[in-house]
Length: 141
Ligand SMILES: [Zn+2]
Image (cartoon, rainbow, N blue to C red):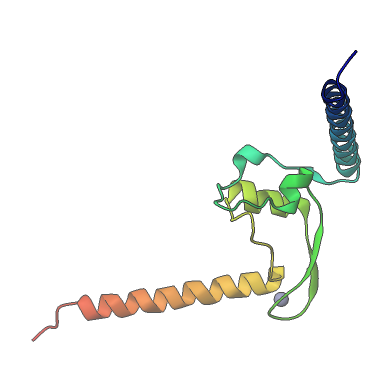
């Protein structure tokens, strides 16, 4: 005859086994769902993320596109002129994987404002460098 303690132990072991099995099933289902969503996303024209090409990040959180595994069109409103534009999957891939942009940065300016901003910055740099050159030039006496 088994003691109550023995019976209790067997019941607990059975329960742990059942819990573990349920956990595994849930994990498998989640993995299947993730794989199916990924295929659908690619079929929809989203572009696969190459995680190894991304800039390293110290953050513990994972950006949406890394979690999902694809870049999807991201609509945004330009912070300078307020125009609505879409950041395309290929532009995102270039930004994160080729330009090694920070994985938590997103597009904030439309194409026109980006071009304008770049021109403004390079003009400012030129003026600055010209100023430095003028200062360092020995004065003729
Ligand atoms: Zn703009």
